[in-house]
Image 1 (tube, rainbow, N blue to C red):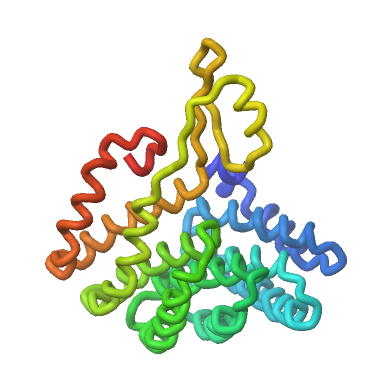
Image 2 (image 1 turned 45 degrees about the vertical axis):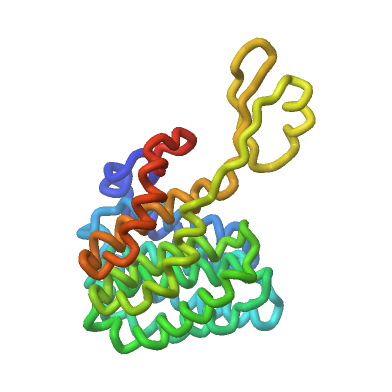
Length: 295
């Protein structure tokens, strides 16, 4: 409802909804309920007018920080991560909406977020790590270069270390799409100073933007055999034939293409070295009809 009826829903019900969600997020006995409350808070704040959110900022930050600290302890002691994943994204969403008003709370969150990125290296924590990378970059964009510069060097080193591990990542690793978007936000924050990192980020970015989806023309029998195969979508062509496309990687391809546009816009002449190879990739995609955002 917060998404479908925004911003009217937020304007009419902000007092009741925020209070109820914060209370529900404190339900320590039911982690799935906590996680859903945090997810709902993300939906609510994403489309919430900044002027409506600011009066609740102190209370939101207080709750989110206390829950994050508690869930970090639970992650270390028990390995539970469900709520923490959502809380990290909630923090990112609040910062994204609050923008410069988030500056006073920056130092409260950044040390813990950097700690997660540095230490959440196990395979089962990939999503949490990716979401935390996203959170750090969104907070940096919200508070601006002047405030973020105190941590910029540490954050860039963490991102560079993650980037060097890209070759070992599986194609469906959730960190990939988060990393690609985070690099683009870092480019917006650092401006021309980001140019030095292009040799590191462009390889994986071009590889992701070059993903070719697996397609197939199938009869009804073949389609039934593949129906349980996750990631396939089908369009009925009649005469017992269907066109199938494996959608895995399409969102990542779309994001990568958008990030290339971002680099070109932000760096201008600093991007000239990569212009030819990007044009060779992009021009054929003018006929890429499998995903609207790529086209």
